[in-house]
Length: 342
View 1 (cartoon, helix red, strand yellow):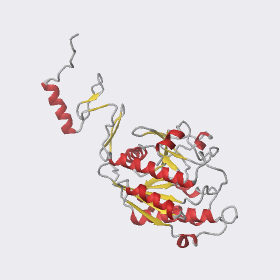
View 2: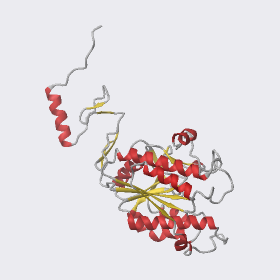
View 3: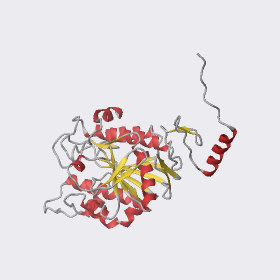
C-alpha cells in the first residue's frame, strides 16, 4: 500500500506562519491539532510565563503581572504529631514521614516549575522547631540533592512567644503547641517582609503536592492578577469543608485547573509581598492572639482580597481522614503518598 504523506505547506502558508511568529500571533491547524507558529500541539502548554496566558478556546490574556520570584517558607515541627488533636493521621506514620514527603513533593514541584518559569527565582526556607538532630539531618540531605537554593533556620520561640496573649478568644489558656505554631507563623511573616522580593508560599509540613502544583499556581496567579489588575491569594488545596456549604462563588480558569473563590483557608497559601505589607497588622494579629477560628484574621483579609482554590486539589492536607479540613475529595491519596516516598 502506498504511504500517504501530509501535504507540504505552500510558500504563502510558510510566509504567513513567519509573520505570525513576528507579531506574536498563534494559529491552529485544527485538522491535526498543530500550532505552526510555535511548533507545538494542543496537548502542550502554549502559555508563556510573564508574557501571555492562553487557554483554548478563550484565546490570549496578556500578562501585566509577571512573577519575579517565589520564596517557599516551610514550617516544620517533627516532634508534634497533631497540633490540637490526639487522633492519628491517615497511614498512621510518625510525623517525620509526613514532613519528608511534603518536602520531597515540593522539590519535585519546584524543579518542574523551574523548567517552565525560567526567569523566576526560587528558594526554599525551612523554619524548624524542636525536631531532633537526626530528623533535621535527613531534611538537609534531601535539600542538598535538590539543586534548589535553600536555607534552614530554627524558630526563635522566645522572641515571638512572649508577644502572645495568655488567654485565647474562648478565654482558655493558649497551649504550648499553639504558641510554637503561632510563633513559627510570625517568624515566617517577618521573613517574607524582610527577605522576599515578590511571591511567598507559606506551607505547613503535612501538605503533599502534585508535581505541577507550583507551576499551576504561578500560571494562575499571573493570569488572574492580570485580569483583575491586582494581586490575589492562591490556596493549593481543595478542602472537603467547601462541599459542606452552599455559598455562592466565582469560577476562574487557570492553565490546567478550574479555580473558585473561597473565603476561608488554613495557613497554607501563596500570596505577594505587596499583600502581606498591605494587611500586615491583620496577618500578625493571628500570631499574637489565638482567635476562634484560628484563621479568622485571614478570613477577614479574604473579604477584601480575592482568594482562590483549585478543583481538583493541587496539594492534599494529610491529616485525620475524618477532618473536614483534611483530605481533598476525588484525589488518589495513596498514589500521591507513594510517589513522594524518600
